[in-house]
Image (cartoon, rainbow, N blue to C red; front, side, top):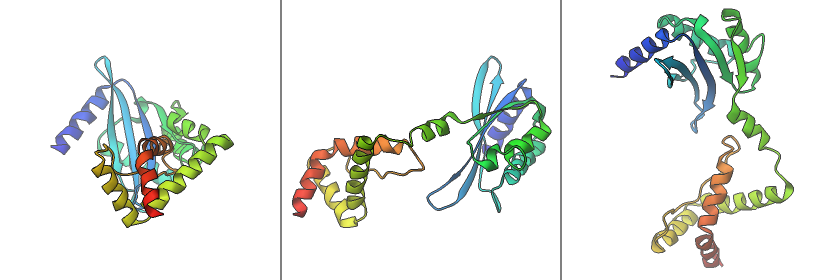
Length: 205
């Protein structure tokens, strides 16, 4: 079934007068790198978006390796690079480098292609410098969450409290700098469970 779906999508891409790709390399919790290529193309009169590639690089993960992986897939499925009008990546040198980066490799094959910086990564960069007052709130909140999540007995106690009180959420969320949206999610969940967290610390006294 997956092979048939992939063949159908590739046929639609080949019929499209143009397409664009969004390339990213992410790392899972198990430290496994994943190359992800999302393609947008015109299907009849509607723009479609599909995941084209999603697999771990074999060895290293340089701009040349990423280009070779995409190039190999395009050649194997007879996708025409000339129809690629835009490439979107993050700002890393291995992606945006004009010589050894992915951008440079694609420019050799498709000189007219436009490159853009991913809006999510731009927003992530803009969210880094927090005002001191907000940074202090975030730091204190992260300390509270880490204190509870770092100990299995603390986690079970809080969960038991939430279950007994009939709360929808029974666990706190961890904050990670890699996923910048986690800041808001962590603070929202902590605020929702503020009474239960207060009771938890009262029980520890």
